[in-house]
Amino acid sequence: MAVSTASSGSVRPRLSGLWLSRLWRRLTAVAVALAVGLGGVAFAANNSVQGAKKDDGGYDADAPTAILIEASTGSVLYEKNADELRPPSSMMKLMTVEYVFHALQQGELKLTDQYQVSENAWRKGGAPAGNSTMFAEIHSRIAVEDLLRGAIIQSGNDACMVFAEALGGGERGFAELLTKRARELGLPKSTFANSNGLPDPGNKMSVRELARLARHIIQTYPEFYKIFGEREFTWNKIRQTNRNPLLTMLDGADGLKTGYTKEGGYGLVGSAVQNGMRLIVAINGVEDIDDRASEAKKLLEWGFRNFESRTLFNPQDAVGYAKVFGGDSRSVKLTSTEPVRVMVQKNGSDKLIARIVYNGPVRAPIAPGQPIGVVRVWRGANLAVEVPLQAAEPVGTGSTMQRAVDGASELVIGLIRAGAEKL
Image (cartoon, rainbow, N blue to C red; front, side, top):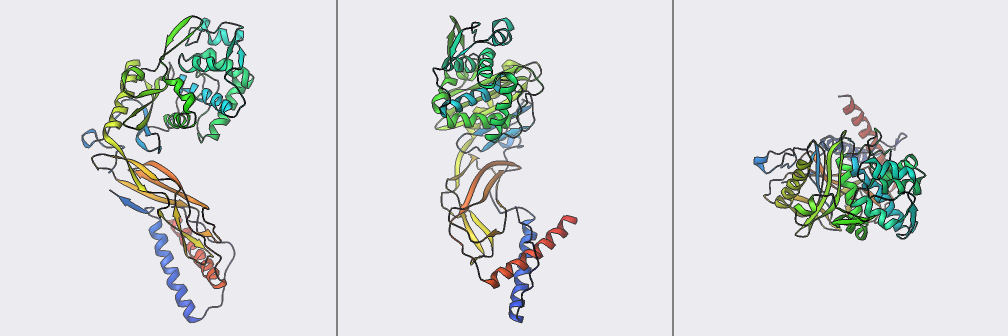
């Protein structure tokens, strides 16, 4: 729980014996509250999924890195080394197509715009390279819509390189644009050195950020996302089937992307919908191509079989209270504008811990709807969901005496915190 530091400056109000007594009782209460707060638990409700043994309803992935999330809430159902950075291989193409989707959405591009296939894109990403390609002809001009299908369905390195040259002036320039865009999307660790995931030490992503990127694409570009589910694409009279094995292995599967390099191993980002619930899986570093498909499928099936959505707080429900400094009220009620929902095991064995995190005390005056902090819900040691919180009601400025008492309280809190940090 975040607790603000003491207010700067000293406060020495003249107080009567009665007021001094009240102040001492209040400071004592604050000290106790802070001591409890250092423990960090706001409230708890009924046992961990991540890390649980299979016999207890948990899961143990064979993939070196893996994550499973529920799409609508972002709830993490399972993770293993999810923040470990690895070569993303062709799964990195998700970042390239997201950049193009965004440009289309913003009106900066049109699906009918055409770009020329340079000799560089043809030689290094096309048929002569011997890697995944859409078989674009040298010096031909290809529409954005077809390049997207070439990149998504056929995993064409040449298609991505055409985008890089047209939109970023080349691989390096485009890679810089991708990194910038990743930061805008809340992907702080991903780095890119080219447009297609071909081996380069600068290409690094975690499965957590791959899953977040997939969730963003699904939610933000529903019309473009349909391309990921198309089973085949023919270009230059060469028919190629979609490289995603989940499309034919699992009911409801409709995306996203596979990848392989010698350095990174086999990886897959996939998504499927069953009974109205969408799950997203990301795995990487698998040694065998068949194991990649079966591992992703098993993890998705486990999620569909064992989880259901539960609402902890409805919109406008009181999620908790934040301490107020210098206000006519000591606290302000916090609510969310969206349901606070989390995925839980159907057998009811989950242990959930929710914490309200904010920089406080919050200075008055406070307006209704003012952003205050977030509520984070953990499943065991893993963060399952995070939802923004806002002030549900106004809080006006308090009297001079109230502000003086709050100032003295913050001074004591600062002293207690400083002492606790030395322990």
